[in-house]
Amino acid sequence: MASSSPSPRPSPRLLPLLAVAAILLLLGPGGGVEARQPPPLHGVRPMAFEEGYTQIFGSANLALRGEGRRVHLSLDEATGAGFASQDLFLHGFFSAAVKLPADYAAGVVVAFYLTNGDRYEKTHDELDFEFLGNVRGREWRVQTNVYGNGSTGAGREERYDLPFDPTDDFHHYSILWTKHRIIFYVDETPIREVARTEAMGAAFPSKPMSLYATIWDGSAWATLGGRYRVDYKYAPFVAQFGDLVMQGCPVSNNNPAAAAPASCGTPWYEAAASLSGEQRRAMAAFRRGHMSYSYCHDRRRYPVALSECDAARLRRLFGPDGMRFGRRGARGRRSDVAM
Image (cartoon, rainbow, N blue to C red; front, top):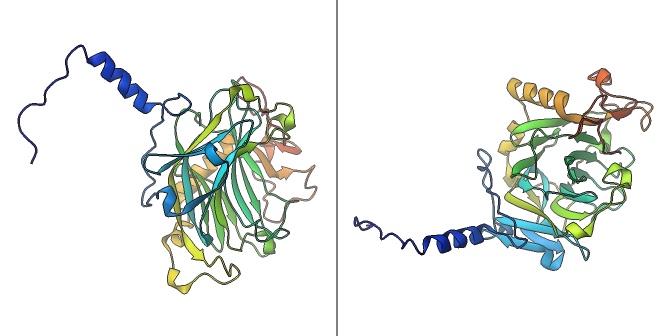
């Protein structure tokens, strides 16, 4: 039992030193203040890095914080960095809280995604959150991609502005993947739903995938089609990851083509793929307010809309290049990140 006697107060002479020490405890390796993670997503348990992940490149550019529950990935002139899940999964719920690099970040790409490209080079599946950096004063863009069976010619890309500054604090980005449906979330708001249709066929991701998180130099395309490149005088660029969640059905690495084990039963995320009316209204509001590019409205890339597209939906908002009419950037311009 704790003593009931009052705690001794520090000498007034020590207070300035204690304040400095407290500040130093908050400083990261680059001298920036460590942002606090948001509360964990409702009903899911975050995991430590060593519980399910492994570094895939970057050497010292990956650093663990908070007893392995936060990961810093940095990009400098030498290399980027990345980590991946130790297991393959056939369906599941995958999430991370991410804080993006601030200031000038043109050409920088941060990605949180599922893929099996290392196993199926020509017929790979992929589900992406890609965060695309920008010049100072203009916001990051977020892109989601859906590739199935090597369908890189039809990446089903969408881009969004965010209703917050993703460099100020952590926000959750999540992917729910089931046999019949894929849902992307920002925090706990669904922002995109892809339903499996017969016409999509193998273009709907259906093979086991691993989870990845990376930071890398995308100067060739990420900001205004490559007009603005990474400027390494602002390096290192540090992306912070926390609240790492992997809740899926693991598949044998030795036989990834095998079906998921029956022991998985019917996991909770199968039911979560049925959005409520409130969730659908929130998703529709996000898409009306923040989607800046839609492949379904891009008649230059797709003269005939892909089978799952409802070309009439939100048609008045988008031009023939798929870019949103009147989309305003941070300084009042049309969307300033080109495909």
